[in-house]
Image (tube, rainbow, N blue to C red; front, side, top):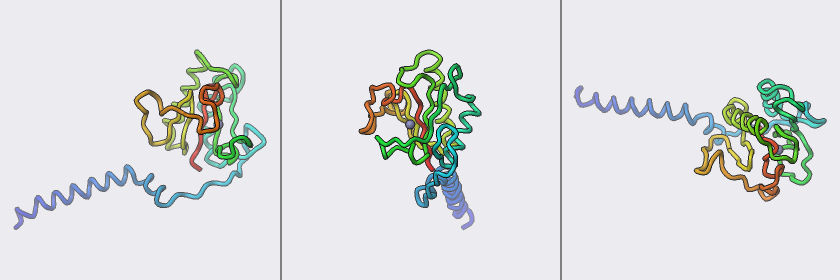
Length: 185
Ligand SMILES: [Zn+2]
């Protein structure tokens, strides 16, 4: 009896252990799906415009400035714009105060050299900090990456099609001149 029961107990323990590990890994994300937290209000002053940001977006902005420095001509990040009315794209996260654009280059240009490198540094840092900063997705160089997703076979994230709003071959529309970051709340 004793010798027959032992393996069963062992298997049960292993199952419980594996379930515990699985829950620890997917738990927080599963909890978000089953009981999503309500969106945050746009109730913080946006340091980049006269508009507003959610607390999560403001935290992301501040963390980026702490990491890459205050924006300006001659600085790694040339400019940051978060809130905007975005009247041409009401579905955008900008009017809700849940997105920031980081320009390593002059608006409307295709960055090269150091500017291009900085853009990739910002995009990859956002991606690496996604859980910590509440990043939902990042658009850069005609590519889009969603939190928790892996790269497609042809490179970083997957191709960005402009979402039916933007020309993905345009410097600004395809997000070649700026890194767009949306936060989850
Ligand atoms: Zn944007």
